[in-house]
Amino acid sequence: MHDTQHAAPTANHVSATPIVRPVLGGMAGASIGLGFWSSLVFWWYPFGLIVATVGLVLGLIALARGARGPRGENFALIGVTLCGLSLSVTFTLNHVLRYLQWDQLW
Image (cartoon, rainbow, N blue to C red; front, side, top):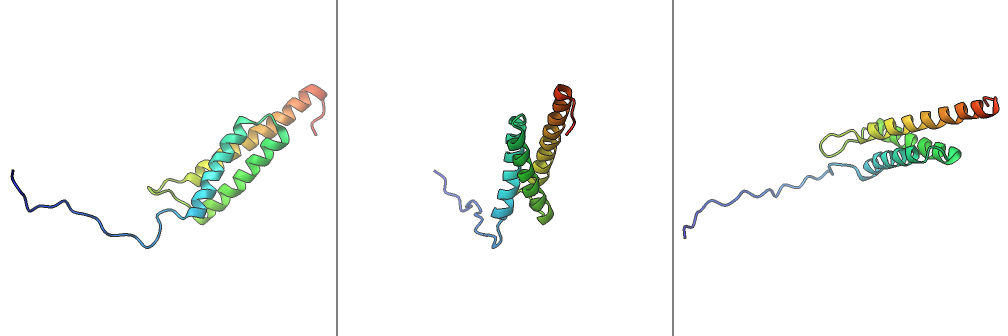
């Protein structure tokens, strides 16, 4: 046995500010989840549209407040993109299918 005097360095430094602010991180995560869910249920017209709109609003608030992940990921932008895509698909398909079936746009 050989004892060494070299110990592994330990990091005892704890930051006073959190890496991710919990509320903004939750809003960005909720935006991603709501965008994904609204894209799965886009044919439920009022429900999918409302879910996508709520996710878009939460994502825009988190994006405006500058929410970033622990490594600098922009989760709010991902959520805004998913919700915007789902919102446009839901709105467009509803009106196009309504027009094709009943010949009225609104």
